[in-house]
Length: 115
Image (cartoon, rainbow, N blue to C red; front, top):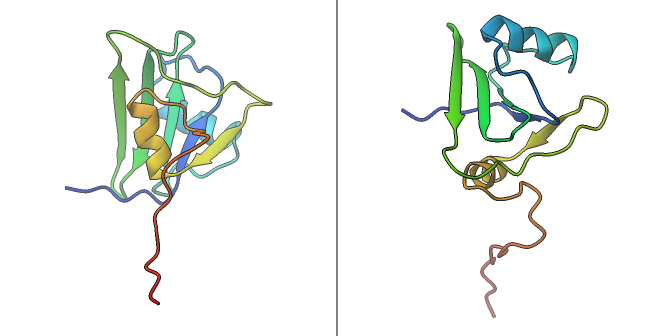
């Protein structure tokens, strides 16, 4: 099964991860003024940056994903007035692989150039 996300939002800064689905949906709507049921993935991180929770609405109900690192930290964005940053699927992979979502360089894809 492959999940297609409308958008992927990273909630900058730290969030109390003791919340449940209703708590995160409330943050999405009241703090970020976004629709928690729009099929986007919303990602939250704890203060120690070793745990993340993700909220996703699939059309019939919410999914709450949780990941705890046994060693290391996520490269998490610092808060700038309770911002939610839109990131790409590639940036999500970088985050989950322990890299910074704002990579300065990457190999660019090459378009065929016919002579």
